[in-house]
Length: 366
Image (cartoon, rainbow, N blue to C red; front, side):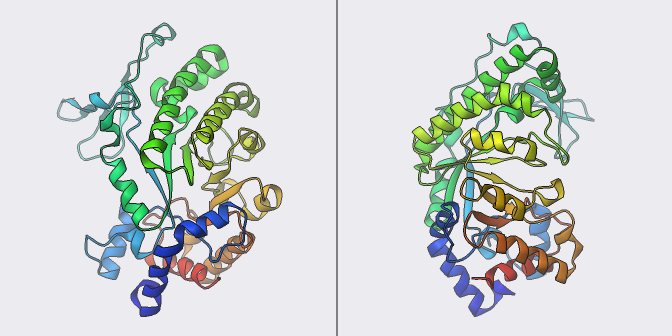
């Protein structure tokens, strides 16, 4: 395995010295000296890896396999001082999650269910004031994480949530979609209020991180596997002006690139996303019809891609020939720049052996 032999250790040490340069080359549409990689790991995959490779708890999986890029987030909740458990009735634990809602969960469960929201009607919007973006508590762990990964030589981006997804936290997903259909002016007022908060978090994060050499990722899951959650016409009317303002402001503040992370089939919105000034997208999910080869032909020089590998069918299949062919095809499409290869996430349905095969194929290419 790449990380267990002397050659592999030398390769990983080299990566610590040149990650930022490789990412910069790729995002500048230059042929990189080697193909940069960005992956995120589920805890369950990490547990499998530790057990199979006998790795102690202090070993960082991102160092072991080596990630060239890191996205770092501050506390962007609307009300971070309110976060915490508010009660329990034996069956459920109730919490204020900081997004203007009370949620409940089963003890020891991961997912939560909203049960009450601060914004109950359109008339209450103006009275709600989010806590300031420059509160030090938002950045208590942020600066240390920035320095940790900067010292390792990774390309650093800061993160903010997106106008759609964070507005659904505040208003509710069904409610916001109904607002867009029935009361667009109110929906836009909610989204603009949320977006201004997110922009200020982004500007403050850039300032505190000194991350302008790379920039900002906006995480806005507004699509499912088949299509966006709303029409391109709605995006153009409501979201496009907001995105243009956010992207322009971030770049004016020093962000070199602004990326959009959006799961699902973003294709119907992609020309508008480019018009908004977005420089790249992630995760480019093949299962959602996002094909790296086709996107490279259409957008090379205008839109970088981060991701492109199938973590739902191909990597979990364990079929070595299929995995190799897939990785080679995606990598070949990005050989002249514009691609940081990776998966959406690496979950427990991907075996350690299959993941390592993908990484070995990438390492052998350049």
